[in-house]
Amino acid sequence: MMTNPHPLRAKVRIVLVETSHPGNIGAAARAMKNMGLDRLYLVQPVDYPNEKAVFRSASASDVLDQVVVCASLQEAISDCSLVLGTSARQRRIPWPLVTPKEAAIKITEHGAGAGDIAIVFGRESKGLKNEELQQCQYHVNIPTSEAYSSLNLAMAVQVLSYELFCASEAATPERVWDQLPATNTDLEHFFGHLETTLAEVGFHDPDNPRQLLTRLRRLFLRIEPDQMEISILRGFLKAVNDATRRQSQY
Ligand code: SAH
Image 1 (cartoon, helix red, strand yellow):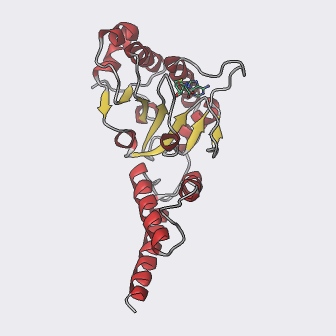
Image 2 (cartoon, rainbow, N blue to C red):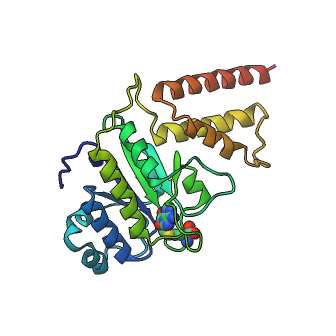
Image 3 (tube, rainbow, N blue to C red):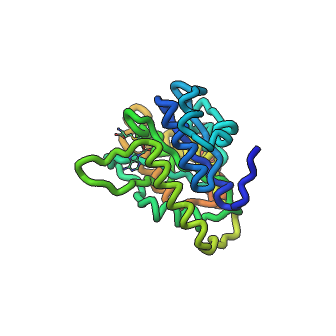
């Protein structure tokens, strides 16, 4: 295991979802190592391991040696407390949008002490799906010419890694907070509990969901709840469940 001496960058993982070209994986590893990052996660890579990846990584094959391959995006980010998704495209229901520089500042403010951080990149052909972006707190968009907004995958990794390098070298004070931030798993459990409770009280119709759950997901992701706040909300949902079930007995 390579040791990364920088406390914040050591907390940051780069997650590539269903990458088609192994050369892009190698080039991403190189971009990461140039900028002091070494934790690369691959979600269902199409063609990996492959010697093209090693070739394109140049002197960053040590990053490839410690790659973590995951079966799902959920698995790659479940223990993270800050997740940023990158995309060239605007979405119908917009997600909180930041530039790479703003993303890097968010990461440094989140700090090394709070929990792991993931930056997620999509497929070369069609990027991240809506439901994948909706697992992230932020949508990072790299500003480009209107004529052509989609960067090569490894180039996009380079831009984000570079901004993070610059921001993490300039010491930004960490956010001081009394509770740990909720992890992706805490949030997903809460969303599941919220969905069943909303259905139980008749506020949400599973047969006609519209965008209710997406909008609620965006609301709660945007406010970055801590673990205590999530457990208060879950306690409240449990009280609602108990009251509804008591009532339905009569
Ligand atoms: N054709 C795809 C683009 C894929 S580019 C689409 O329409 O979404 C491969 C990946 O590189 C993207 O999923 C994203 O993670 C990253 N990327 C490329 N250009 C980007 C940009 N302008 N802003 C943010 N991320 C970008």
